Amino acid sequence: MTQRRSSFASSSSASVSEPSVSRSVRRRSLFGTLMAVSALSLVSAGCGQTEEPLIHNQGGSFAPLGFGEAQVHSDGTPSYLSGEMAATVRVSSATDAAKLLTHGALAASYRLAKESTLSVVSDGTDEQGNRFIKLAQQHAGMPVVGRQVVVQLGKDGLVEGVLGHLEPELTLKETVALSSAEAITKALASRGPGRAVAEPVLSVFIDRAGEAKLVYESRVDYQSAKGRQFVKMYVSAVDGQVLSEHSLVYTALNREIYDLKKVCLKDGSELPGTLLTKEGGTTTDAAGTRAYQHSGNVYWFYNKMFGRDSYDSKGSLIMSSIHGTFDTGMGCSGENAAWIPDPFNQMVYGDGGFLGLTLKDLTLGYDVAAHEMTHAVTSTTSDLEYLDESGALNEAMSDIMGAASEVWVSSGGSAAGNPATWTVSANAWKIGEDVAGLLFGSIGALRLMNDPTKDGMSKDYYPERNMPGSGDNGGVHTNSGIGNLAFYLLSAGGKHPRAKTTTEVKAIGIEKAARIFHLANTQLFTKTTTFQDARYATAKAAELLYGRCSTEWLNVHRAWDSVAVPGDWSLCVRPRGGF
Image (tube, rainbow, N blue to C red):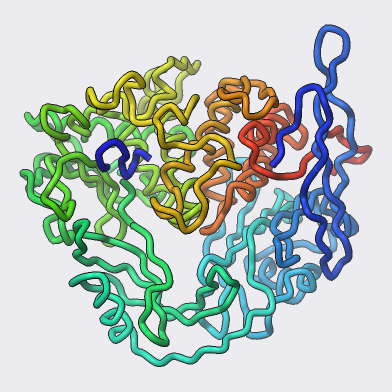
């Protein structure tokens, strides 16, 4: 967390009265031209509003395969398919799912090169019996960075959705010229002294121009003018140039609490510090007690709401260190809190700044703990790349679950179970209100989910977002306001606070909204999910949880319309025979 902005501190919209016209580009696939799904509006009728009936069968050339919805990537390959494939296409194993895209009915649309294969990242089933198989693209035995899809199956084993992006017709023109050690050494020559903390993996990286590059993907720790950096780095295997890098510090019930005694966190060797207490114990240190209680409440929130056992759902130890300071390049500061991922996997809290003018003791904020531990959940599920739009979604998910968890606890959620009713106060939409010092002024928080631009930095309207390649890793903190506002409107209802759009969203409540976003993040998002991808993934999650064309599904789309994230959708009625 830095001053005024922390590491955790971060289209078209359908009018209520007039139909809007889809502006999506119609693209041609090998199956033919996909029909765009019109974004229809609500129409007034009498003293209220009624929904226009619309048959939800705009799958275009994918309709014969059973998909009622279809969207394509700019390269013409599918990015979102939803419906139900014919009973003849039944998937019983993850291998079957991979074959569907490489040699089966969808192979011609994905157009994978013969050297490309699909490996299984995860294979899980939710409480409703829906199955989610995440597949990652490999080329000539090497992972292709960020190219993943999720194949979603119904209870009967039929394919109901495919989300994500694979690289079609991939060709490599480069050959390896450097060993991993040589490449990392060259990379660090322009960064500062450091080391790879994990064995680099030879991978295929698709750059912004769409060119395939051979890289070493590595977790690297180095000292820069801005302090100690712990990053994921993609280093050319040809010349050692850094093609991309982003922070891995996202500024856990088996608990341990440690005291760092204000030792400056530089390379991780300082962690975890001196043990204060472990599960079932106590400590006289007030900050230690708060860290212990907060991590426990976050654990029970995820356990009772979503059935997760610790952040990785494998019962892993939840470690926290208090009284930490962070290397800034100009000294050591206590104005931060962070989840430090693999190989450390723990929380670190600072004590705040001078007289608490900027930030107070970070253990004072329960939503701080929930935010940071959600980064841990994300890193073990979708693993959203901390860069550009996927990074902004990563930050938004932590704010969203921080707010939901805070409401859960204040409404009576505990180890005994979920609250009977959820009571939402105005503070629910304030992020870090308990740690924000006097210099945060009238907003009294680090961020506001219901009116993001009031902090002077966050964005709440997609056309005004910070673009890829800009500062803050492409706007991972500032652009998170777009997802935050969409979630707020879905939960509480209403319109855009600055009247940027006229779409009115009907409230479904924070509990339902949290279930939708959690399912999307843990099962349907991939490493490189964008805001538009998230629109369809959250709509798919709403469909799985509450039904296609349900009020929840409908208002997910309205919420994204309200912040002008582009996408095609239609009001719908169930056609005869179902979907």
